[in-house]
Length: 330
Image (cartoon, rainbow, N blue to C red; front, side):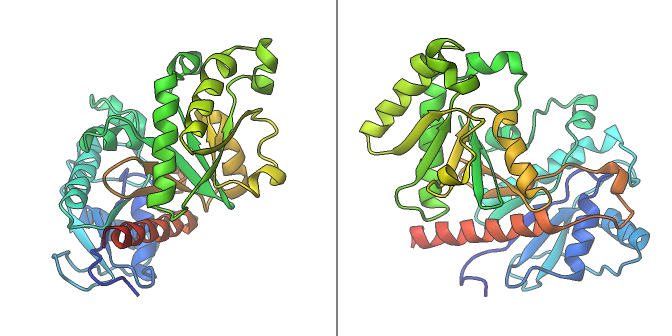
């Protein structure tokens, strides 16, 4: 049952040429149990994709206070969207959906945001600078620092840096960045996941966590001192640990999250274990935000050969996080 007073979640369908609309059609066939959901997408797009998939789709228009399990809030497309064919003219629509969803979350109209996959390349090709959902949502909510975390297969993996070229990573791992990331991660685990004193494993940056300074000094000069400082303030931190060995059961069984230094250090392990069921979570925002762990899959759009497991998991987690925040605020 949906907790009393909890408004619906909002789902943005993402790139109109990708599988986001297909996922929305799937949700209309089997709505998530006990969770009210508003899909933010173009109505003609959703109905055309449903016809292409050979599935019925009669979503009612969204109106605040309505009790429909799944309803639709429609925004206009610049051009008709064709499954599998990117159209730069529709990039502004993708961002407009995100803006409307965030406005609703900030106003209390929606309990949280679940995002379908977007295509960064076509948005940039349209002349709209866009690094990713995480950075765009931080900008919309005026949040100076957010943390990207993926969950799946019983693991939570957060990142100090996200979408940076490899040559820029070491310079971005400053004491301030690491300190703030750990504090955001700690607070989110407490606030959104109900863990009173989280235990966080922290990876080193270099192979073998620097090998005592022989393979890099970031562990000695940046990571180690920050961990010592935060431990003295009461945080339960282990590390810096070599990234190639910390993902062992003996370590993971006793931790609540892993903090990796960069995108491809931690996420390949998690995605290998949970792809198709993983969830992307943005920590540090004033709103709840979860997402699927996959991309637009243009080659699968309109074919029916998709798996909606990650989306359903993201919806369930967003509801749980929103519920947790509501209980803490009560």
